[in-house]
Image (tube, rainbow, N blue to C red; front, side):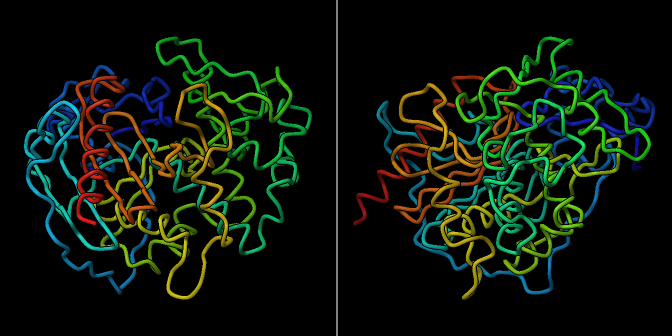
Length: 397
């Protein structure tokens, strides 16, 4: 049962689904899938069911995997109990507390831990929400390497001329990547009149991408490059930028540059907007192992074999603080959350994440379903788990 209705998914936000066409209630009920257009009002059981099969709710495009699958060796297993600052934490208790469906830990390219719960397994896909942002930013790097984007210093309007005269006139590609455009934007998910709620209600008109139609109405309120502000719409614009520059769909380009050559285990799918384009800021469904492999790709600097898919210094910049977000020890890179210890992370609501620590050659990927979109206590426990794994690896040396 496909195409119950088109869910207009957002980015990190990916919270308000009020732009959706009405889901066909009878069909969705029969499949045990949500009928409410706002993911915040889905029950936990509905989310458990839907997050593993988002392609049943809306139109998607396939990100094709190749015939050669990357085989990961088994490393020394992590202990089932780790020490944290607040005492011992078992893997089983951690997964239950985080409501994780899948958890994969790679170290030096080897599997140190791979666990699944909630009737989910290694061949199953789970939605990424805003983890997709970090994948999209890597496609910008690929487009730079391929010559489709000449420079990050280029004005955005060189690639999306429809934005001339808008708040994005004079904003560079790099400022879009770091969310420092200075454009006025309201990311209040609880406000139906906010930009993040309203921009997804925009419909395609005369073949123009709905992202462009809304974003070109925005005005600038700060000098570009002087202020960081989280803006889901800007990641969707990054998707438009890559598609326009390369002349390819995001799914096709991701498959060509990373998914096939890096040996991902299974096809992924990407949710499309009203204009039939991938939503840059959200909603790639893939296996947890493939999310971990993408983290490994990033940790290795975007290198596959002897060749770099992105400029050689791309992840040295993308994964380090390019913008101050007002939080001690943290920052924002090229669509990655960064930490002053050199690690960086892709994060999505309800507990999706890829944590990358180049110093320890460590990648941790998790997919789950927190009780709410962004509960602080869940973030604290997740960070404590990351730190516990880091400390354990240090103790092995």
